[in-house]
Length: 588
View 1 (cartoon, one colour):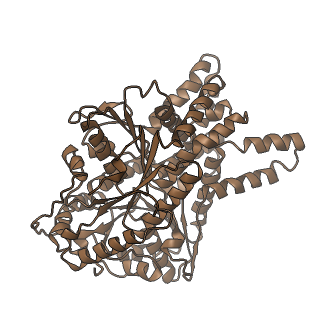
View 2 (cartoon, rainbow, N blue to C red):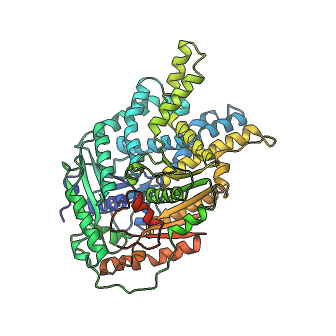
View 3 (tube, helix red, strand yellow):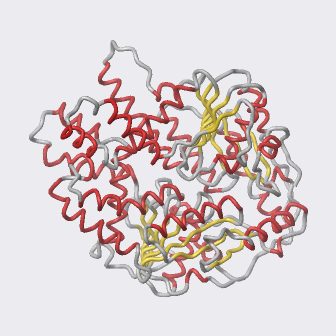
């Protein structure tokens, strides 16, 4: 195995890709490799749902934390909530003794939205990229980033916000105190320069040997090249080794993955390529992290078979949903666990039963048309909440309403205000709320963005609810989107996960976050189960046996469950999606 992406690494290395492809594992393995070669390394996660600490079996959080077993390696997970709190304090502290409490409360509430959280996290990110004083102790900074859509936005922001500041449009509510804008402008400009310099920065696109993730990697490559990030490498992770085949499923998966690598999208073909083999065991703990990039492949002689728990078919959940004629079904979970597939399968099944269904997504990187292969299904309509399109529509709507009675100067000021990066938060939330309301009349099946991004959207929903509740008082009558999400008769949250350590842990944390917002998940769906596929090759059987504790944990936690077996082929197109809701266990 030739690890091309490790050769001649510059100081900054970014790992990005679709959720669930193994970015964190590879970032951790790279950081360990560098540290054990004598370099001083900071491994930094920008993912709101970071699991760097889980991989090292270590509590990390928002403080620089050494990895005891690896001298020279420190880690840090940017905590969006901690960053936002520090950001708010930076703005409010100078006026705390000057303004009445009611005014301070109002400012605090205005700074409680997801836009503030994103700006605060972004400021942290740029400081580790452009502030030499802060990273003076390190030879390398390895960035483990959020799933693709969020990362593209993160990497585009330096350019967008530098332009925003250069045009003199920054204000205290958006980009921080005016006194700090000159420094902010300098940091952003340096971040832009370093991102575009191949001698300083390398981007490692991580994908699986699957058409969907490779197409997304291709789109990411093209979009980042357009903003000047051209030093890119491709890593295809978790490829089933030829030595691990031996049953129909393993043979079919190996053929499918080999074909995908031999027929890469055009945008990826010029990139230096590394393939990393799938390991028989989960990558958790320092030893497993070291082993990830080792050249030898461990193939178990055989695994003890055990009676695996059957969590039931997806068809059972559809049967219960179909007893109503409307409602909101939200599929949530870690990136790459199959939320889009599960959402599309449920939507097609409900439409086939004669219900009017609207299938939509809040994931900037989702492509429902690819899952449906652009085929028309009766009773089913499809849309996508596109942040850029939503923002433009919101600007046009505001200009046509609030702006219609203003003079030229007033319209110019309004147009300038609408160029704020925070406008996107309002626009996306507006479209999300519209979809929630639609669920009172027919089914709306929503494929959400990966966990961290979705939690930010929930924050916006909660912030709006608190604002309305405060303004209406005890005597007012109102219904906010959050109240509809809390209504179990209307909203059914389906948590989707893979039967592995990190996805199940993250799904558990998601359930806890939802419970705190008084939203109780309706069901869990376990996707890609080797136990359900009854794999017999020793390699896959070993991985199937490792699913048992996770399946037991899920059965204890969830009110309803379903499981989908690992399939030989990716379930694209209505017919393939229908098979997921026709029986519990599909043939390999």
